[in-house]
Length: 170
Length: 197
Image (cartoon, rainbow over all chains, first blue to last red; front, top):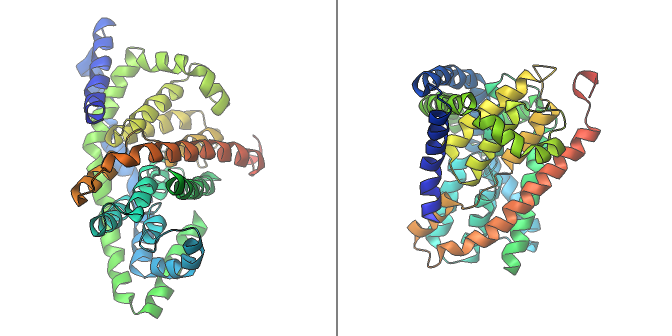
């Protein structure tokens, strides 16, 4: 499992460079020509990231997430979701590092528990939806996302339900 | 996005005031803005590297080769992309990078795919159907091995951390196909881009 992720990166680089050698593409020139856009693209994302990260930071600092947790607690109790997994679910689409932090708290308090397993499956099977949308659309200067956000959040929701079902039966 | 932005900020201020957490909310404005710049700047180096690599891959015909191989799939999912567009190859490579857990490579390659899709977009300020489909696949977060999660479990002293691989694979596959289905469904009912589809 570790060998797979370890070799994936060198393999991609080797395939690209070998093909270039066979096709006689000047690799150094081609690389630097492409890499030139790196700075420009990263800087282009800043306004979009500033808007979303500030809004999400404020939201997290305000205690709104705990409030949502209290409202949702009775529903999730019925679905057999432990109380300490709830914050992980709410934070997951908003901030990847915060979700991972909350998950490691759950794991550290009870590493072999159902709660740790459920939180692990939920995090491993999803993405930081808001961050991905912001970075990808921001990089090409698109601010009208149309249905991309509802689709992303609905898929997250289906993923959560699937995780609960699978963890109960697997 | 306008509503989300408005909702997040206004609710945070009101809830912060009611919870007595207003000082935290105020300081999070500065730390959030600071973090935005840090995140963007941390992308510069890796972005430059992968954009460079991808330029080589494109020049030697690797991207269009991959695009040709996966054409039957792209035709179904991204009906708007013209044949032999480099966008399809970029999408496939970014997807593969994501699946293998190479997040550092997946983001720059994915952004390159977005740039290719933007070239074919009829309204440059709003998301095309192809972009929404690509992002739906991306936000679903398909991954073969959840390396970060396993690392946390190992660190916490979990006895059998690899036990989560199978259920995670099942769930991520379900979420992935759900995302594709949703994107197709919404594409039919959402207001078309610029009044035409």
